[in-house]
Length: 109
Image 1: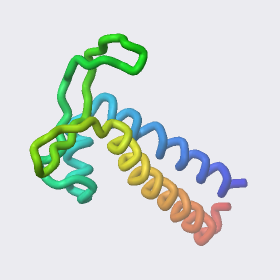
Image 2: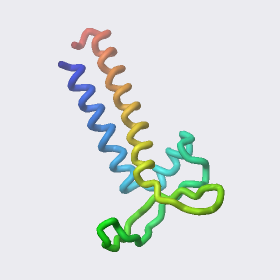
Image 3: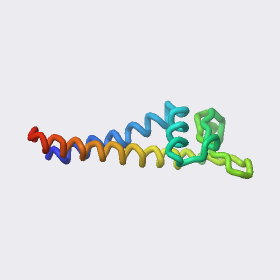
Image 4: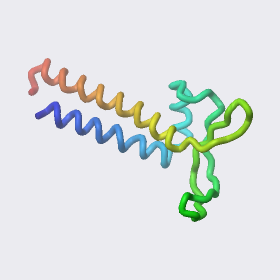
């Protein structure tokens, strides 16, 4: 039962923290992804832009842009979120397992 509680809380935090980071802490997100080598240093940037959504509405929001070697930019919002999701899920699920085995080792559960 405790394992289920710890793993579900780790999974929940692994989803919620990347959402928070990507939406509000764009500079920290860029620094994390560049330091973990998901993107080359200096190629990923976050800036506020006006763009047209798929339904034809104008939207002014922060977007993540990747500049390739030819100098053209492309939106990588989904890739940035997936990379952050992957990093945080691995971290929090590992931390939940370590906490479970530590509690089991010391006889708490």
